[in-house]
Image (tube, rainbow, N blue to C red; front, top):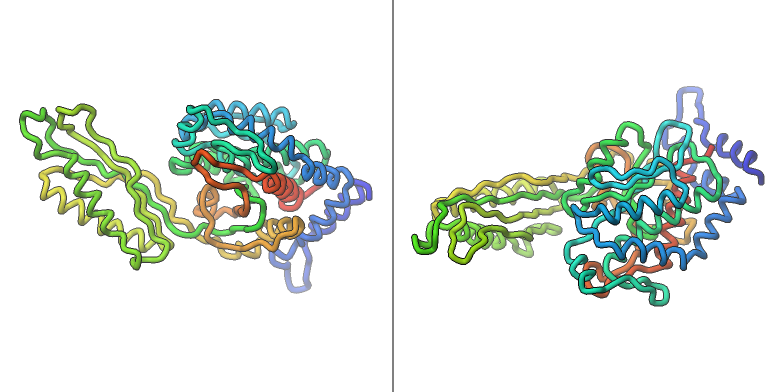
Length: 421
């Protein structure tokens, strides 16, 4: 079948179905499985999909280049520059690195709308320590083993998909935007910036974090981060150890951890991951702080815990003669978009997963970057499933077969949810 014949068939599939008494619901306008199958009749596109499936060496090479560069959250600039270079080499246009630093490139469509693919650019801090020890990604059979390989396999897969789409010569209806966002680990800051840029022009966001064995279409649970800041009198050890902000920090942390009982609420977690205060053995600091991370399936549970934490802080302040302040840092309350399960975007993701041989597990409890658009009422799906394992350890690894399926899923979502001319 020629490209022109297939394009006509795709156009017919995308026409709205008109009834005498009105118009069919938006999600009835197109059948993503039919759109996908029609697209696969284009020889160049079918060849691109098959080529990706045989690109294990290319996938491993891309991942090795990307993961070899240290990229802790907040310091992703060097990796961002490398990913931008790879995007340009793949044939994407308008490739940019912003101040976040997010990396964004695109394949130009005609509609003025965009389908936005999202991956993560940053690592956990411990990963950089392993890289300083000299650990580097290396291929071992059907795996790439080494620091940063797990999450960054999604970035490599996205670049591989972009290469194949450009080489196929197909023309999407919507812009296909490929983004590697920074600062996911420090409060979804990169995704916030990306969302601000595309919120008014997107048909949806697709977060790529797995091979398609699961599809998420909602943002489950609520997450809240705070800094608990302690203030007290500054002085030398010789002037007396109390009052002391470190006592206030210690007593507060102990009380907060004691809130965690296994039977409290399923899916509820409280963590203190950072504690910061003085810098000298013989000095009593005037201030210090600790982080507080609260997560629960329901927003009301987070709010209940916050009230309990505030009561603890009031009590500790009185006992230690210090002042404690709870400062909001990041909140993501999650949410659901009515009809998201039956949206064209979600059905496209399911159709592609099934084409790849999976019966995807469906969930409305998505996490990570997709929480931002869904929280604002903008369609988003998360492509989950197998990717790798042992993240943030010396034995971290990525599955090459999973990486190839991530790339094929991204490619096929581009021609299904992104549509073709």
